[in-house]
Image (cartoon, rainbow, N blue to C red; front, side):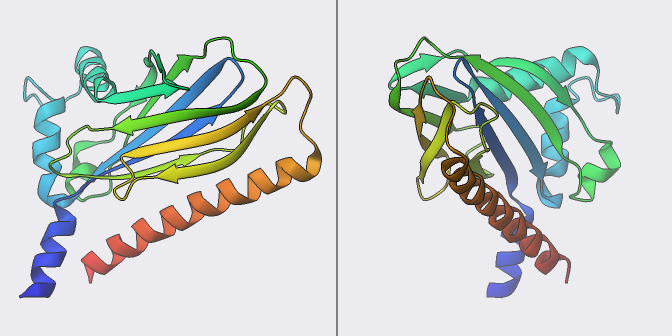
Length: 202
């Protein structure tokens, strides 16, 4: 009985995995949303509003905006405006199999910041009734940015990224440490989710 409940609960989840890339003047957000089998039709009905089995450009835009409206970004307590860049939606059949992932790309401009330590905070409250969350910082593309630490709440709805901003490029050694930490976190998160999904299918 307990095992059955656990399996059903996992199929009821809406995985929302976020990756954030910090540059000196902007932050890019990539969000992957994958509903479990039990909530697939609920999610599809929120996207395909006219119920014609197709996702129009207007429906894609409306749903992406709805998701992003539940996401908050700020740097050092200064709110950032998150704007949609692009989105892609999977086939309905793959969603109903628990395999379809909606991908939303967004970005926010950074204010002018002084050199030194800064704190970027990400918070996602979209569909908190069924949502499960993952959030990680990517390795910065700019040599001027070094991710120093990542702090999450228990449910990973909140992520605070501590990072150093400098006018000079970071040293190879320091960037190597940032690459290793961020890469390991992303790998662990992906393995964790895939393991859970395979367990459900047994």
